[in-house]
Figure 1: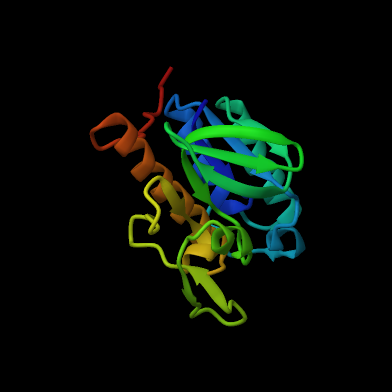
Figure 2: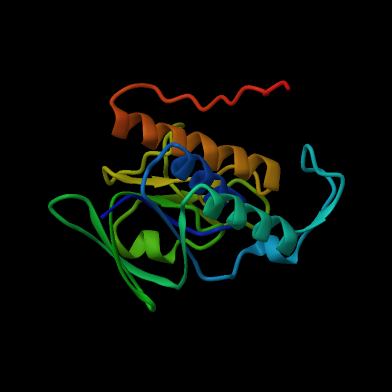
Length: 188
């Protein structure tokens, strides 16, 4: 069983996976390779002069894998509550996790199918979003939402930050205390 399953490997999902795996949580990142970021040219992402959306996504996935996240190419088709968490059904197998982070960009169909509440979006062209609180919690305990699908701006820097924030909240809940990830520059 995974501690955290993340559905969607765009900036929000990959960022969540980086933080979760780096914190030592058994993490699976499930992605259907349909991120809208794959069509982007990005020049407004802090720390990056310019990058293609596909390159940003691949870099994020590689970072998550570096820290131990398992990457799975699959379409999540259903999520069911179990005694210890959730069972995520995909077209490439079944995965169990204590917590699930939905980072599905503009796609809310899976969330609506499993009973996660949605509401009208506020971003241009984003019609429907998941109704999540400021911490990323949805109406189903243990299911969280991050990034554009949770109502934050579609800009990659903002969705990445939101994915990190939600992951930190999940990690903190799993740990029973507030989690902080701070590396210190090593001098020679």
